[in-house]
Length: 86
Image (tube, rainbow, N blue to C red; front, side, top):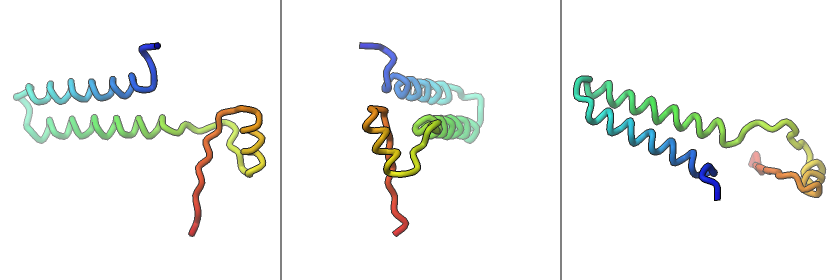
């Protein structure tokens, strides 16, 4: 089993956040609003990073159901997101 898998990167983000939270908690020189602001920027950055890498843009995006079926028949991994306007 490899150490670096899909969960290890999430664990690194959480551990870095906990380390930052502990460091900001122990850092008494700054104003509490500055410490809270730094933590908020970290959380916002981590969320944006997760959202940006969650669904990376593909090079060949199927436009029709026939293209999706051919991709599935070829055995290529395919993510189909269905939606409705109603």
